[in-house]
Length: 277
Ligand code: SF4
Ligand code: SF4
Ligand code: SF4
Image 1 (tube, rainbow, N blue to C red):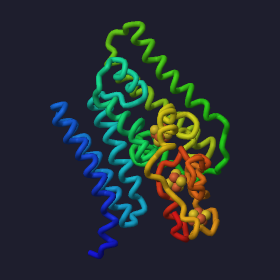
Image 2 (tube, protein in one colour):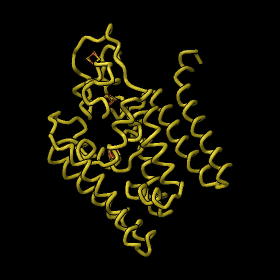
Image 3 (cartoon, protein in one colour):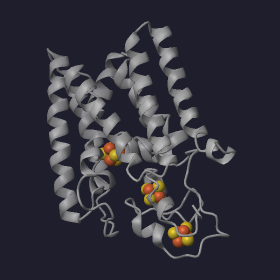
Image 4 (cartoon, helix red, strand yellow):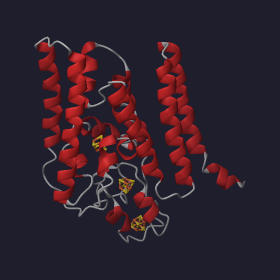
């Protein structure tokens, strides 16, 4: 194999190493084999996706999204009763239990975005996993001024859990499980309705999702970003047309338009006729 070909596999190898390091460290420090299984599975899924991407497989991102999203929704959520939604995060935070949901938020949604931006949104989220099956992959690019709704849903989730603690509710674990089911159903209904109304698969992500309150400010500082080589760019605008999140990817500054919305889907990179991205 030529050297250039080998170089394409460095990133999958790095990602696998990072996840295996987390898996082994948590397994040994918390004495729970679940962490070894969990982070190894996610690391292998991501590495596999990156290998497929390196081989120009057009559905590489969707493969990872389905592998990780289904695992989290069906196995962790429904079988293990782990509420990975935002109310689950508040719940485990208030109980002081540093377990799967809090670790998940720390890695994927709070500190991880400092490195890989909103990779979670492009490759793992089980809400977007369903929304991305809808036919409005490329939106009409008209932005609505309703982004404030995300702060309302964020506060509602916090108040909901705080009220349960204030009321000293019995069967909190059970309530959290049903909140996970009801919350997901609500997200899917709202997400699909909004996608159809606005002809935009990612309308829910742009206007409603409470997780973006964490994701947007942290991903502003992301280490991995799509950058534009200005010497190659011919300003054809193709990258902006295909972007599901309306990012002005030709602007390299951190303040670029909708920069904190990039989900690293690489549609712009694949569509650029000049390999400028
Ligand atoms: S914005 Fe929210 S719903 Fe959309 S992909 Fe990210 S976490 Fe999922
Ligand atoms: S698609 Fe490529 S060449 Fe066209 S505007 Fe975007 S970066 Fe420039
Ligand atoms: S098309 Fe490019 S700029 Fe837009 S979300 Fe995907 S990777 Fe980010």
